[in-house]
Length: 336
Image 1 (cartoon, rainbow, N blue to C red):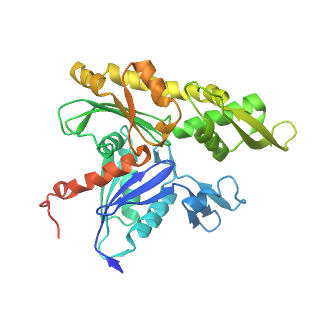
Image 2 (cartoon, one colour):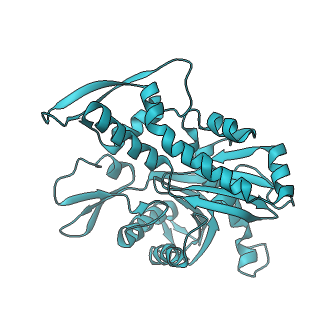
Image 3 (cartoon, rainbow, N blue to C red):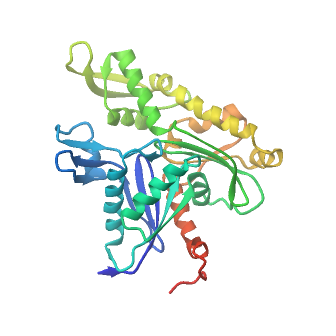
């Protein structure tokens, strides 16, 4: 079955790749992990299957995440991953698809070019870029075209993008490399220091999702984990409590709060007044960490709302932005 060229929006995340096809909605949601045979350079698995291999591969197989902190760290593997996902979404096509990809708000020209080149090599006819906070705002249902201030805090896997948006563009923005992955990193360090146990990224992520918090909970919850004892080198099971997770995760959470503060300080007074009235919108998987909205609300004194379907906001916004592609190409808005 042949497809004419499609328009695809891709949230190329550090942790997850989400693809949106115009007219169909979200059609793909996979971890951004690739397993490669280091001897032959052949891709063995992509997405969920590759994620299951993380930390469990023999010497010749390398399971990696080709995107780190919101940017491409391994160009070749990113290109192969994009090619695989584009083929899955499009099937066989007569015309290559036009693709819109999200990027963090503070990326360099070199990093932008790497994304465009990787998508072009993977089979895109034309590549457009959109800043993550703007896509997140559109996906959260905010009308960004109006002359009033909206603040979006998009916490992904590799980066946190904070922006004040008015009249369709970012007025003040910042991007910091502290997000979901950094929480996992701090959990690994904490468990190692306090319990003398080494755990992997996946266990740290399970702890973050199940009992992690950055604001005191009414009731302490617990979870059993297994890791390697650093003293005798044997597997060991320990019980971890949510109060310990608070200790482990509070530092990166406060760094995000400080970044929000600094953006608010640089915001023009009229727009700051709008934000004070409307509140701060949080999007991205990282904003679902228990208590992060309460912590931000307490520290800023501004109402904080988590967007509906926070994980998919950026992809949905990219999908809605696909409607403007014809305008960008200088064509009439109706296509056959």
